[in-house]
Length: 363
DNA sequence: AACTCGGGGGC
DNA sequence: GCCCCAGAGTT
Image (cartoon, rainbow, N blue to C red):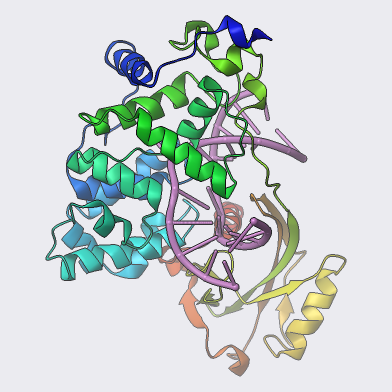
């Protein structure tokens, strides 16, 4: 086998080569790079969880502009924070961000904890983020293991163990910590993630000018496309949301989504969710039964349909406009908001898409 | 161990 | 369409 064509890479050589690349050829620039302020490091890491750097950049700038210190964030109005997070997804991150800011402002006197276990105990901070904060802000020797690291290690060392299995995770973490440069963990962690993002990319990696070309097991065995291995498959489900935009004068009803479901703590219009195979008529019938609208309600035109593909859900949103002459008692738990003020609330993207396009139509 | 949580971009 | 992205929390 071509296993013999590559030279097995010594553990100490790996980080030496990597750091050399980092010094000479790594041109990747990001505002939080080299940052030692734990607040900024933490903020950037939370924003970047499962999120591409390009997508998170504007949010990072915006948050820092609005909340220069962690005390500012801790003192902030929650709705304002959610409005700033709007569109970024994974909204539990926002919840945990607020909780942790308040924890640090209160319990830690506004000073970010500087040891790994305390950092790991913070809400929204798992093994990756704790290692990132510990190494970047405090120079503590904890190796980060993110998607980049899994990919680089799996390929260079030819590891076929699944990265999403329990033992796989454990072994990758162990290897990552053996490879870590103990004297400059922050630089090493930055280097391996930048390397994964710019050279050892998921598809079409730049193997031709890769520093590990001579050593990479995946390259010499022609297994670049097969590594890393994932064993879990994504299940998709289809959902159909019938949103009722019920106008009373210039106001319309909205509420915060409080269930443990997608878009928790964002807002929505009165919603009837139906299984696949239903029609707008059946949703309207149900809205009539619930007395959200009545026989005198004026239903405007045709419903408007928007679709959104998420990782685990395929969502169809049907927006149904209606007008009522009296406030429906059945919607007393909803907020009646002037339509001009809707932009002050945070909504899922699919609702914002509808709102922004409707605004264009009404002009 | 399996599930769930968004949105965007590359192919 | 499918996969991936500086993952974490819940069941």
